[in-house]
Length: 334
Ligand SMILES: NC(=O)c1ccc[n+]([C@@H]2O[C@H](COP(=O)([O-])OP(=O)(O)OC[C@H]3O[C@@H](n4cnc5c(N)ncnc54)[C@H](OP(=O)(O)O)[C@@H]3O)[C@@H](O)[C@H]2O)c1
Image 1: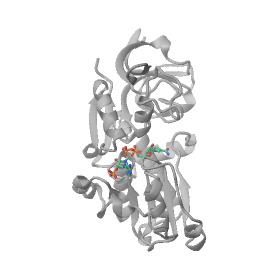
Image 2 (image 1 turned 180 degrees about the horizontal axis):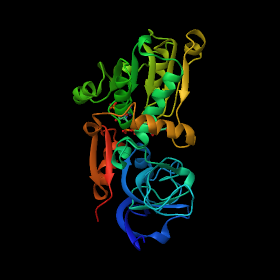
Image 3 (image 1 turned 120 degrees about the horizontal axis):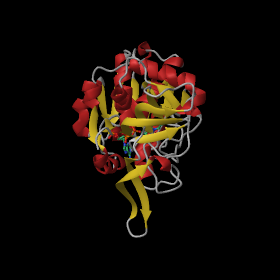
């Protein structure tokens, strides 16, 4: 039997202080209807959670709200034949933490078709060390490989390198044998990026281009861009003939100013990445890769583990672009 109440982070809109975060006891009855009630053991912090926690209506329309687009835990109740009490499961994306009460709480209730059984070789905690950021990194790498980018073709640029998606993308690419060039705004994190497997670290400004030229010197066989804006535009102009660029984020800017020339003169391909509604067969394939072929030995090196009451501080860091690596939230206490 689940307890009557559980701990949850709640974001409220106030008249005088804007959006305010607090820790509250919530009751199971307050959760939305759904097939599977899950006792959350771990969650993780993603950039989208920080947007939800700070009142971004593009992510969350109604407040009070509990963010958290990731959750890993144990099924407590299920009306679905696919899941039984005691099953260890992972939920990432869909509407979790956006307009459905999310993983920054000890319980969630969700539709069964959002739920993935924990892969055999991945603990619940490891699942959240990856979380949506790691999943997105793996999806981006898979797209490069599926578009025939191989290590022999040359260097892969990863932008927003010290972030959650960037850190894991560098690690997976390096494990898969690619030569990775990291672009980062954090000079002091060069050693961290080299330890993850980057061969070289570029200053973020070197990866930007405001020259207005339609094409730049071809440098990259592939690009995993997590930031958008001028940096993505420069990456497209600097991609070699037949190269592939994936695009998943907008921390620099949602805008993209480019011409058609990289596409029609160099045959480059720009691929959009969406993890939230990734179809279930591909979703399961990605989790299996993270648990097996691409499982990282150094996961702990890129993870900070925190409790629910430390989240507000880390939300501030991630909004300011200061976070390095991944933040895992342990919900097992209290
Ligand atoms: N499409 C999807 O399914 C999907 C899934 C996950 C994430 N995302 C998006 O991908 C992006 C990255 O997510 P994340 O979880 O990795 O976030 P994160 O941990 O906050 O990392 C973002 C990184 O981008 C760099 N950065 C921050 N502000 C910047 C700016 N103004 N200009 C240029 N670079 C800046 C920083 O790295 P450096 O200091 O090293 O440069 C920062 O660590 C976000 O926009 C997120 O919403 C999309």
